[in-house]
Amino acid sequence: MAAMEPRACVEELLLRHVAIAELWVGHDFRFGRNRSGDAAWLRSEGHKHGFAVHEFPAVLDGGQPYSSTRIRAALSEGKIREAARMLGHTVLVAGRVGRGRGQGARLLVPTANLDLPAEQFLPAHGVYAAWAEIPGSLVPAVVNIGIRPTLVDDPRTVVEAHLLGWSGELVGTWLGLHVMERLRPERKFKGLEMLRTAVEQDIAMAGRWLAAHPFPVPAAPMPPLP
Image 1 (cartoon, rainbow, N blue to C red):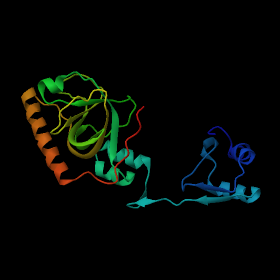
Image 2: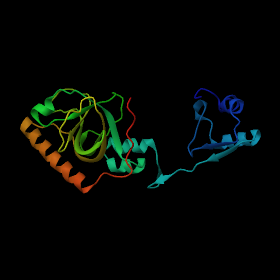
Image 3: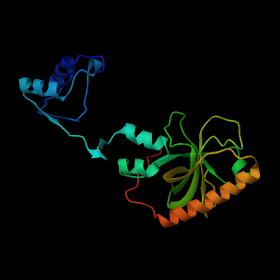
Image 4: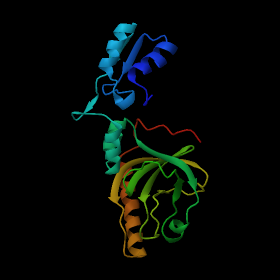
């Protein structure tokens, strides 16, 4: 459709294949070659061919329209609650737990690492308070999103979660992380002891924050197993 002229879109796709009576579009709807078709043009075509065109007005938030661009910008800055407000539900990162390097359990605390596609959009690097959703359980968690600069020299972003007060095997489990609040940005520490101290502080801070903010409604629904 992006290569078709707007008139061809209407005549070849709508009028030929659909007994169209009404067409509803968004306030910023554009279609066809060079995005040259819009609601006003469609309305004139509707008058000719006997269908009505209705345009939804923009839904505003703080004087600006809700949009995926604004949500992504908020997530890129770690503004989780702002993104959740615009989404209308929690910010959810979900995937199957894979096998990590084992450094977390050996050197710091056990973590569950999500296997995620490289192209998946994620919030800004940092440490977050989150609610972890596993089959039959909802557990407070502290989540790190980033490259773990103190431990490894690897530019790939990793999402790993430590579930507070919980123990068990999670490899292969479908795990959802309802990311609630950014506690601090990711940073490189001078040594393992400084990192260990920071992790202990992160765990305590996440526990306090989650205790003061019970699991919210509405929550983003868990996606189905792939």
